[in-house]
Each structure stands twice: as structure tokens, then as C-alpha cells.
Length: 490
RNA sequence: UGCCAGGUGGUCCAGUGGCACGGACGUCCGGCUGUUACCCGGAGGACGAAGGUUCGACCCCUUCCCUGGCAGCCA
Image 1 (cartoon, rainbow, N blue to C red):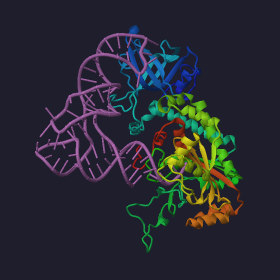
Image 2 (spheres, protein in one colour; image 1 turned 90 degrees about the horizontal axis):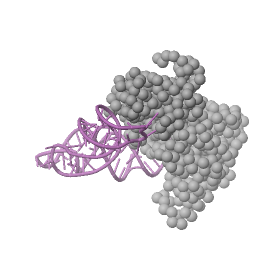
Image 3 (tube, rainbow, N blue to C red; image 1 turned 90 degrees about the vertical axis):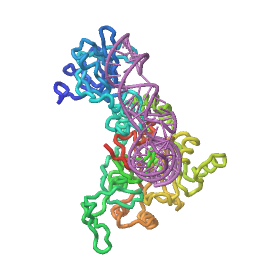
Image 4 (cartoon, helix red, strand yellow; image 1 turned 45 degrees about the vertical axis):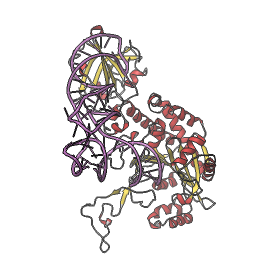
């Protein structure tokens, strides 16, 4: 257990009872006066030795508080210099006490002149320590997901991810939205959102069978019925929307699809706002404002990390985000999108899948639309009803629904949403058309029987947004411990 | 799930039907240096699994496992 002032002031208590534990971020960003006694606690990123001036060692230490690590100058006069300091390797944990000084070297404005370097934890086998100061492939780092947050890239991703979470909450809170904690375990099956993970306490080696047909008897299961992990909080949050007016969910969701792509996870996070007395246009306005707000927040608050992404991951990312914030999202009717794509085909564009009214847009189409035709996010609205979910509001033309997708260059669909069908008779018609069980939606239908109002909402894929912002190519590298088919390690 | 490409020191890559001749980075040892993707010298360290073909397989064939890319499902 750590002793001393740091117990009462575990983080960021610069100026209180020196020597005080300071975050690397505070030390480097002018929040601690040069000349102050400081203590930093963190992990060694690298060590370089010099014999000059009787011998000294440069140890860079990071603590996750910002992108940069701080340079610690340890002189040979330290009692444990020969025995410990020169044996430090990447990954060792240390507590450094000293003075914040202006750096004599180039490459950093300030550094710590160490009076004491306490080694808290050694790296037992430097040869096989998985994280070296050099570049690693992301594929490799996924195999050491417990150590990858110590790298530049994953530290930066974690901070951006956090920043984005907070920005989302702030965006909604500022606009009087109420955060609703919708359930993770659900009995809403047949939502049409694809395969779900079963939640059960039944003994899989000895399943209870119903009399007669031999089907599994879920009445003996924990909840007395079949249950699954949620694929969306939307249906539940609609209930709160029709009471609280402006609501949103933000939590994990689960899809048991066997999807092996750079933009799918079996467990991912989703933000789902839902607004009452609103139509599709209001919904699109909200989506656009939301994206712009959070992107702008990340640019402001995590410029250090974003600079790194622009330098090493995706040269265009900052430029792209600044354009997004400044521009107006293109809005296109689905039908116009099909027309534009058809015209592109006539102009020589080649697609694997033919373009025709009634089809769903393929990845190649979305990519062409956002990357070639428009060059910024596009909101495609009013899709054919046959390719969309039962709860989406049927338009007056009878063949389209008030659905929208926000497509972003590089990753495709980042937001999917719709105005919801608030008319019970029409909703029932859709449930019937799609062969769904009306009884299963009894409470959802109640919302249309008791004080129904037009309302709308969307789902923002959190990992896709982080990927879009950082330029990271795979959503597996923007979530701490990715869950994908055949992979639930860690 | 389909198609394609891969699995060789700790990491990233070369390479060959005949005992692993490899390189870079990291690691360890030594030298140099207010260093900073330092530099110089030296050292240790590897063929995904199971079958098959063959005198002999890391190499060819089959199956399996794993990884990546693209596609579908979607956020």
C-alpha cells in the first residue's frame, strides 16, 4: 500500500504538502512551477545512459495522464544508481522524487532532476516483455491486450475514448436529456436485429424438456422464459422518451453475428438518443449537432493525442474532423442516392452489386457516395420499407419509411436511426407483414395506445466513432478488450 | 459464413526438398554520448498442430487451429 501524502491526495495534488504527487500532464503543461519539488509515479517507457558528467541516466516515465512521457534525469550520485537505475527497462514501475527543472537538452521543455528513484515493480524478464519501445503491429498487440494500454497508441485511444464518452454525456446533459439505464438482459426477442446471445442458468448438459414436443422448457429457466443479451436499448428507451421527452441510453450491446470485419464487435457500446414530438428531420439535426459537438470536443481536449494520430496513424484525421465540424452534412433522399449512383455507373463507376431502387446500399455504394461524390458525412433518408425494421414510421408514399443512416468516409455507417411508427394501426400492420408476434410487443404497443406522440431516435456506434476520429482502422483496437467470434480472451 | 493471403528467434521480415548460413529492431554484456526512433562492437535466441508423399519435409499434399484483408449481417 502506498504511504504518505499520496494516500489522501492520490492524484493531482500539486502544491499540497510537498513533495506532492503530480501527474505527468500537470508537470509538462505548465500547471506546476519550474523549481517545484515533485513526485511522479508511473511506468518506464525507455532508458538511455550517458557517461558524461560522472554518469547519468535518462528515464522517460508515463502515467497515462497525457500523451507525452516525462524525462527523468537520474545522476550517478543516486544511492541505487548502479544497483537499480541503470537496470531499469521498459515497463518497470517507479516513484520518482525530485525537482521540476527546465531541460538542458532538446526535445522537451521541462524534466525532472531526480533526488530519488524508487523501483516499485521490476519487469521480471525484459527479453520477453511483450511491449518494446519500438513499433508493434496492432494484430500482435491484441494478443497482449492487458499490456497494450502502455503503448503510445493505446494510451491515446483510451484517452480519446474517455473524452468522447464525457463529451456525449455533456452534449445530452446540456440539452436536458435524461440518461436512461436500459436493461442488458432482455426478453425482447425477434427484433430483427440478428442473432442474440442467450442468457440462461439451465444446465446445458441436461436441459429440461417440455412435455410432448421435446422443446427446451424455458419456464424452468432463471427468468421463467427465454432471455438474451440486449441488441439495442431502443425499445425500452422509447418508453422513457414518452414520459421524459428527451432521453438517451449509453451502454454495451451484444450481437452474436459471425461478423469478421474491421467494424464489427460482438460486444460494443452504443449511444441511443430518443426525442419526443420530433420527426426525422429533427432527428437528423440532432445527429449532426451531436457528432459535431463531440468531434469538436476531442479536437479541443485531446490535441496531444490527435497530433499523434495525425503523425503516425492517419495523416488526414485532424483535417477531416475540422472539415466535419465546419461543414453541413449532406442530406440525400434514398431515391436520389440511387439516382446519383446510377448516374455514376453511367459515368464509368464500377460496382460489384447493381444499383436499383429497393436494394440496400452496399459498402461499396456507401463508400463511393461519401468518399467520391460528397467527401464528407452524408445523411441518407427515407429508405424502402422492405429493407427496414418494423418500428420505423411508414411515409405517406406507402413504400418508404422515415429511416436515416449517417455515413462517414472511411467507415461507412456510423449512425442508424428513424422516426418511430406512432400509429398503432400502422404499427400492427407492419408487425403482421413481417410475421412478428404481436403479443410479444404488448407493452411497446401500449405506448401507442396511451398518449402516443411522434418521436424519433438513432443509434451511434461508439467504437465506430472512435475509429473515425482517431483514424484507427479496426474497431478491435479502439475498445479495451475486444470480443469477436472465437475471441473472448482477457 | 464465403473468397483471398498468411503463420520462421521476444517483435517484424528474408530463405531453402538435405544438420536453420539470414537481416532489422528489442534483450543482455562492453564502448561513446545532456541522451531522446542515439551511435559502435560482441552475445544469446525460431520454422502453428496432426497426418501424408519422400531415403530425407520448415519447404510439396490433406485436414485442423490461428491471424489479416475483402464481402455479407449491422452500429
